[in-house]
Length: 449
Image 1 (cartoon, rainbow, N blue to C red):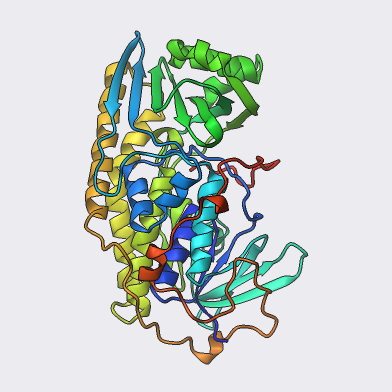
Image 2 (cartoon, rainbow, N blue to C red; image 1 turned 60 degrees about the vertical axis):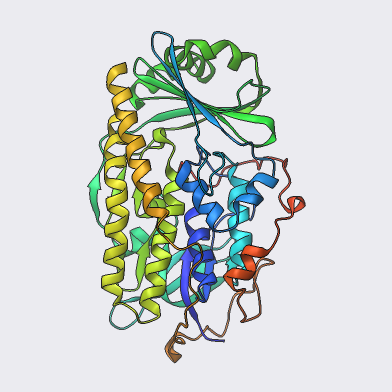
């Protein structure tokens, strides 16, 4: 069998989405993920309108809904002084409501769809090095499986979708071209029985909080502030810090949150400043948090990942099919990503500074909303399904190595790919994505999305 056209490193939202769209367009793809299948990861969960629109266009939103993810039809903004502003989520084509799925659910839906499209999925496989040809061009990856056995995958292109601490970004030396100055320190927990059916966001004196309804009848409750203030609060204990910051950001939410039934312990994240990396070079390209990360206070990381996966997949297919030189295609990918992200990044930086008064934060949130509107308008211009392309076969030097890795249960041994039209017509079986499942004992990533 010939080698892969693309090796995608990282099987979460950005990587699984990129692999899915490439495979639907006729590209031979390997998806390499270091964690076990179905594990959880740190996440703010909330999908904004653009993210829901993407899942709807790809035929996957029904699976999210069938798994019991609650529909979110409103948002309530709480401000210091007791003022609250309700906002209804206006239905639009492809978006009847917003959703905030747990990550073990959303990631599995995306990976399953990628496997059904023909992607070879390798879980519990950790990339340790990049292959390079005689000219220094990246030509695939070297990795180890869970048993410590070496795995080598040859590919024309390698996509780094492996998060904030991206191995691909480190090994390629991808430079940071813009670096943020702000970061949020966050505490969060899941609670059951909290009477809320919409997003609730709260902004007080140098602190913020939020309620995000998710699966299993639970709500993710978070509090956030600057790292310096968080360290000061946590000197008196994590539970006290959580309650004190909640009271500072949203006094009206303290009693209902504390009366709810907690599910597990409080978890924390110290934060990292946002950045934008130069996201491509000879034989490699970055997507998701590997190439662009902003503070999670505006709850847009998963939506960014879905958006950028589609932009990148289109440019990769265009280049591989001979329609545009690689450098031109990837430069346009990065330019589009940066154009759609620039204002949102800047506004998020200002929110994550926690030095605003209430009038200022309302103005910042209007800037965030404006940036999200521009993003949705762009996505609405894209075709519903990728056009299937004829990708020229890999040259002999890219043939699959003699000791090819065993395929996981997700993988397909057949060379045939499922046409996009057939995939979109397949029903989603709710039993495949149960509404309730045990929480894995540990998270596999510290990156919020």
